Length: 96
Image 1 (tube, rainbow, N blue to C red):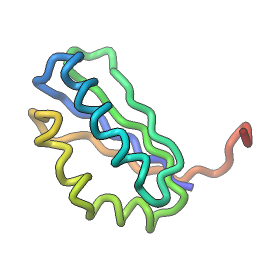
Image 2 (spheres, rainbow, N blue to C red; image 1 turned 30 degrees about the vertical axis):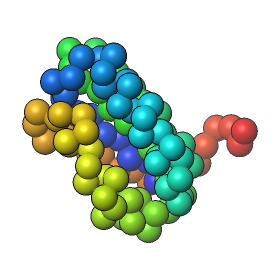
Image 3 (cartoon, rainbow, N blue to C red; image 1 turned 180 degrees about the vertical axis):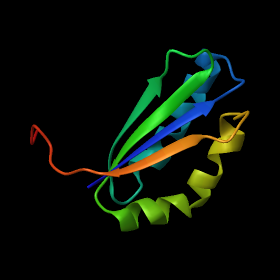
């Protein structure tokens, strides 16, 4: 499994950002290989993130090349390049 962590800075008010995320939720649920996605807010003003758990590097790559992934900067009015980290998951504590 693959863990992808994205941090982004947005000009949108939090409520508007959350509304856009909820509108796009069905599109993310339909992505092949996406096991889970967490929508997060950092301790820095205007900075949010997504924590994705993928079944494989191939699924992540396919998503990164998709129109949905490419639409994120515009949808969330990102003001600077996002910080993206990719990690291999060695094992998980629980299998629930």
